[in-house]
Image (cartoon, rainbow, N blue to C red; front, side, top):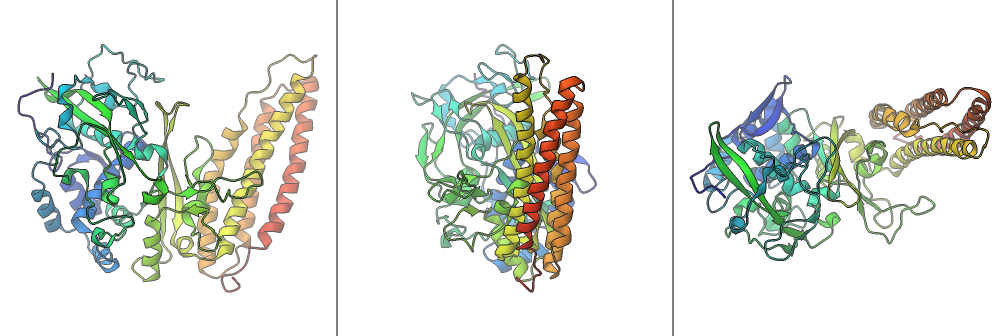
Length: 542
């Protein structure tokens, strides 16, 4: 049963947000302390990448309502201040009453009191790595009869994460409807622009916010986070268009109600009710600012003009750097939009143009995602990657720079495809040899190749930005990148050959296919040099 005894956990003053300070120390802080000490905090770091992303989005919604900023000039004033001012924050939070209380009787934070007539399930349902019912995970051995208890701080963090990243599938129905869509962030890779401190990070992800002027689009004057909603959430699921950006950042993808009990160690969350919530009645590309989108490619590698825009996602092996053009570059020179970088980056370009942030700065894009099973109902892995974000590249409207980056990425893709082709042809020929019944090699060339290109590409991207901004030739940096790809690929083939049976016909077969790959690599390199030469120009010549 849900506890009827008075319970309270005020997220404004309780220490529940996990952070790392600038000295590398881990601690938990309250909402107030997080905002007012943001200049001394390095990052918010949750238990999983999905939690980290969800907590950032929650804090961004709060800061938009407190600080705006209502204009570029107001943004620049906040950027120049040593710390975020306390008076607007205190005034706003005081005006919210008990809306940030996790166990408030009328408006529990991110929850729906209308679910009280249902019986709570185990609190393990809040935590994706817990194995509950049909939700079988790899490592956790929780069973339905186990009693899982969470501290209020743990429950609050997982509640925020659930609303942003919960997979789709069947949920407990409030009445009859038990089908749920994935939560908003479970469809895409969430992109966060990261600065030197949390204060910088938060501001870099805060575009001009004036909902009465429909900024950022498509906000409306009725925009507001879920905790400002006057009427309690209906327990019935609905389908609607977001009222604006902070509404989307706090989107109630699930109707949730926590149950509590008091133990010898204090108040704990011992159960939870989770039912279908609000479904999005528009395309993500129309409303989501913290994601990149692109049109899928056709058979010849060209974007399918009539296809819908798809979000850029993380791959468990192939790095997100392969989508650097979609993540960083504008799309102004193309007829018809085939990609859209995160719209939070548009203001950064303008701020640098107007001298509010250094033109030579290099920030970081931190991308968060999760891998679901084939049914889209179970989290199999959490993913997090970084890509350098040089302001010089963000500002560029030069199509040759984007084309050069695309050419460099295509070269790595082609070499990776050649590696897979080598391994596949080897296996086909070996399995066709009746005299050789040994098992084929299982060494994964993808594992040996793709992850080792992330750092060389980051170096290449930063060097390209530096030389481009200085009006220098991009040839040297591009040559270094080509050689780095070739070296990684050659080392991968050596490891692959070492993992093959090194005797008799197997040795000859391995050498044959390795030689064919070397020929293919030589041809790909020749083509790359020819194509890249068309884009390797100085800034003045562009």
